[in-house]
Length: 267
Image (cartoon, rainbow, N blue to C red; front, side, top):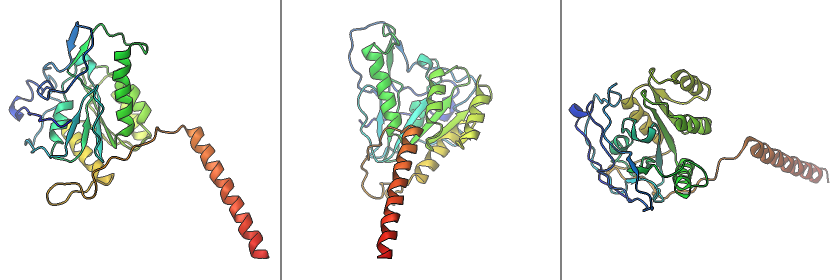
């Protein structure tokens, strides 16, 4: 679905973060009632989201901001906002990122839903928990760019898990300040896997746009995508053993073809 995303003026960014409650995503109804507001206003004490150059872009007609549990409407290019949520205690950076990208003909998948019911057990057997995790795993697979933001005041263990899962995918960008408790691990992992690494939010926005262009996003003078804006479904990432088996099979086929060509040339 496409949403209008009001942004907070730069002068107020150190006091509050824009909330996706303003975005009004459609959420599934379940029987639980003890909810925690995930999109509550969190004071940005470390001024992590401060932008030196700030403007509100007009929303492109093809822009989509997707929230769980509704299946995303994918465009040709998709950005997934991975990173700190911490049950709503992290600074609310995801809708700000979506807002700063809304002039692009892309999909932004934001896993930060409006509220979370505390009655939901974080176990695989809980259907509502499973629904949320499946939404995130599916969207991570289909994304062309995965941007991670680690709030320095959080632990964010799931974000660390997701970074490890996608470190070698060539579609990850990381923003992590030195105050984050595992910043050294994150930094060294990014160095090992040649992942773009920045320490402030403004640079993260810039790197996301840069990677989209590197992935092939081109726009005409009207800001529309050059070519059809149609999503091509991506396959689930293959294990190294699968890739090695496919490579070995291909090499056998090449060797057999060369042998046949060699026999034919001798005739």
